[in-house]
Structures are given as C-alpha cells and as structure tokens.
Image (tube, rainbow, N blue to C red; front, top):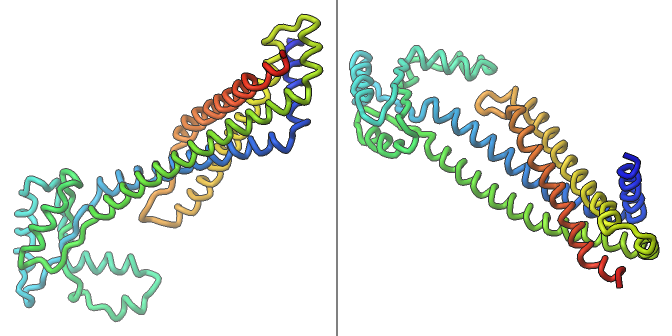
Length: 298
C-alpha cells in the first residue's frame, strides 16, 4: 500500500512539474471525447424522435369538400375504409370538420382572435394514416395524390429520411474529429512523459543504480498518462451530461420532439469513454517511455 501511495505521489509530482503540457494533453482528450460523446447524444436524440414519429401518423390526406368535387361525410368514412384495406396501411383515423376545428382551437389557443374569425366549415376533413413501415410512404403518397377527392397530401417520411442522413453525417464528422484529436492527445501525453523523463533523468539513473526494477521506474509515468486520460474523459462526460440535462429541461416546453435521453445511455457510454480515455493515456505513456527511457539507460 505504501509503495502504491509513493508511486501515485511521484506521478502527481511529474504532473505538477509539467503542468502546462499536461493541461494541453488533458484538453486534447477532453475535446476529442466531447465531440465523440456529443455525436453519440445527438444520434440518440435523432433515433428516439425518429422511432416516435415512425410509431405515429406518417401521412395526412386532406379531403376535398363536396362543392370542390369531393365526397360528403358518409362517403369520406367509406373512403377511409377503402384506404384502410391497402396492404401498406396499418391504421387510418378519420378527422371530420368538427374534429379539425377542435384541433385548430387547441393549436391556436393563444390567439383567440384567429379562432373567432375562422369558419369551422372551411377546415377540411382529413385521414391520418399510419403505415406498416415508413419506407412505404412514397407509394401511398403517390396513390393518394392521384385521387381526385384528395385536396393535399403531407408526409413525414422525407423529414425522417433527412434526420437519418443528418445522423449519419454527424456520426462520421464526430468520430472523425475524435480520432484525429485522440491521436493528438496520445502525442501530447507522450511529450508530457518525455519531458518528465528528461527532467528526472538523473533520479532515474540513480534508481537504476540502487537496483530499482524497470517497472518500478515506469509505473509513475504510466500513472501520469492514465490520470491525464481519465481526467479529460471525465470532464467530457460531465460536460455532455450537463448540456443534455439543460437541453432536456428546454424540451419540456416543446411538445413535438423529445429531448429526454435515458440515464442508462449516459452511464453505459460514460463508462466506455472513461475507459477509452484511460487507454489513450496509457498508450501515450508507453509511447513516451519507449522513445525516451532508452536514452536514459544509455
């Protein structure tokens, strides 16, 4: 136990002596893992919202009124049953003019003057369609658009595809930058270790003369790199977690999207990133030791 305390103390001394370079190494780890974790969080938000939208209404078909060449209320219900029979369709919900007006009042509840001047009979009835798979939206949208009783068709399929594309791009950019900065962190940690070895070259030589083993000499330097990597990783995890919490509080005021990420996601990836930061720190230390400790031996 006493030996471990001594080794940790030696690594902290090295960090204090090379505080500026060590800070740079910690910041490199912090920035690289913040980018990586941030990309993961954004990707998870997109995934959760995409799943939520995929489980809801995919297509809205607004129907023409009878005086526009459309159907009366009874025929619109029959048309709903016809669309329901399509193999691509999971469910269809019919919203008549009264239901459309109730939705209108709810959406514009903060603007009573607009509700007052709106004629409920001018609002179109609609079909709210949930598909078997969101990938089928183009076929259903085309069929509905070609039907003369349909006034307008709106689909959320394109938005979901765009979100998936954005998610892929963010992942590539985030992990690409993280890889570059991670390599930079390894080099900075290696330089920190090299400076520590050079500053203590006389002590290392004396320790070898009195019979200290190679691992006894190397462990403080390995611990130094480990501490730099872990500190940078913990800072990255805490930063992204705090940002996500603030984003979640903002999301409580927005009904259309969810900004709430489960705690298990942060715990799982937080552990992974801290372990990765520790690995980066040890890798940098080993690189520095392999490059410069031989010079001390000679």
